[in-house]
Length: 179
Image 1: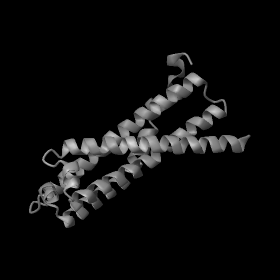
Image 2 (image 1 turned 180 degrees about the vertical axis):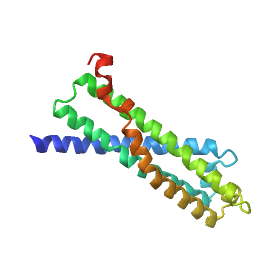
Image 3 (image 1 turned 90 degrees about the vertical axis):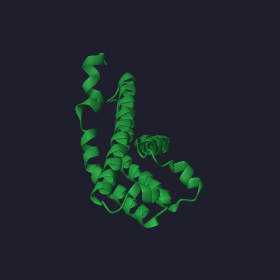
């Protein structure tokens, strides 16, 4: 029976990982596009702007790295259901909290990545990174892409701290919701 539960948990993690991965990448791209006002990333991609492509690939990879730490919680939710630690209503609360947490993580990640690019842009006064990206400067695309990936890796530790906040623990709501 334990093997069956493990396989079900694995399938559910893959399923939720794929859904939230695609949704998070889409949300990240939309947010990043809004923050980089002067650049329409999708239009630049259609024009074949390799520098923008590098930055967007780094953004998607960075968001994937950050999310990979948060997706384990879905497996834990299902393990808790199968071990009878969670009732069905508590399972629903846990799922809602997990989704909200992932949204918070994505929004914080995109904002911190954008802020890091702005700081880099300020520190390198002789180069306007966003203008160079729009012109298709591949070297600047690589520079910004590496910054995005490094910041993403650094953020993983902070994101794990968010997961441990009591507000995202479904058991914190048992008394409040009468579960």
